[in-house]
Image 1: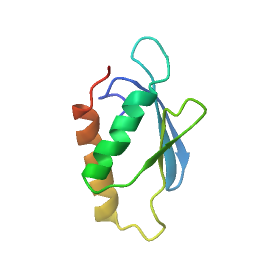
Image 2: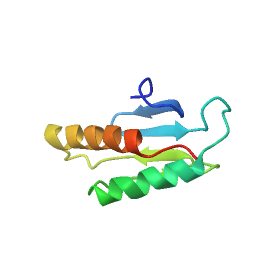
Image 3: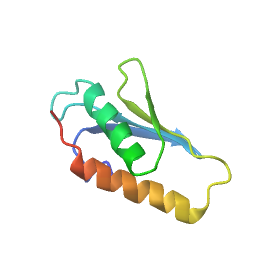
Image 4: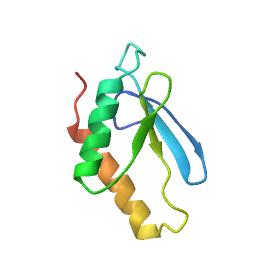
Length: 89
């Protein structure tokens, strides 16, 4: 996903707990505004995630341990769709 969407500086995590760090493309400056818009757009699609980090520009994704494969696929597909639609500003 990071190769298809500009502004994702880092993807990290372990197991079901992972995060995506957003920056303004080409500058490396934290993009808290886009992170907030992504969280809100995901909520509008029925997927709850949050943001964290000293610059408030990290998507915090930690689904429940009982998540099913189809639900994980929905999370990833929805995030991919939202990232394509939520512009940098």
